[in-house]
Image (cartoon, rainbow, N blue to C red; front, side, top):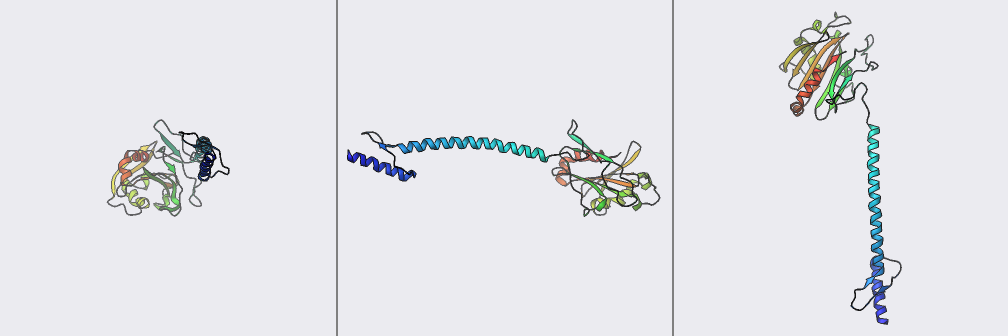
Amino acid sequence: MGTAIFGCCSFSWRCHQRIGLSRTRACSAQVGERQDCVSDGVLKRRTALVSGISLISSTVLGFSGEGLAVVKQGLVAGRIPGLSEPDEQGWRTYRRPDEKSGGHGVGWSPIIPYSFKVPQQWEEVPVSIADLGGTEIDLRFANSKQGRLFVIVAPVLRFADNLGDDAKLELIGPPEKVISAFGPEVIGENVEGKVLSMEVAEHLGRTYYQFELEPPHVLITATAAGNRLYLFNVTANGLQWKRNYKDLKKIADSFRVV
């Protein structure tokens, strides 16, 4: 009997050493049956309980974390000033806000607003005076998968000094003269040999010149209003151009001075 008790206590002590309990647990042993340590059973039940609580906690916290992420994203998102809600095709219309600054120097009248359409994923990006075109770049938009656009608003006095305060594109010159004079401001180099097509369009009595250049891939829409020349430029890299030409052309054709 003493031997049996000693054997059980020895087994209990080994269990105590293995699981790191502070007290020796009683063990029961019967002839022909396997010895089980009570503390093992307690540990297993505790482990199961802790595991269950951990699973529930992580699940609840996981849902809570996702909820916070959604709320945070909702707080960050916002409408770009001047940009409409998407239409049925997912396109939005940008109209230059009347209150937006940009006189380009003393004596210049406020810029006459313009508008254009872009797919829903396009966003306005900051304009830097260090960009090609300097302070005459009035606006930039971009989409990392499709391309980018920018609007140059230049004084017509750089081209001629007798056009008055209500310049007409036809008086500035024919398409060939306009693209030769202002094209380098868009692509940063001479446009000779790069103009693939030139078209003339009229909308609500205003004349527009439309150009396609390559290389680089760029669509330019030009018109005049007030004492300024407007150059609306849509450009993309080779892959973007190949995949999204139809949309890029639609953007370029949508430009209007209002």
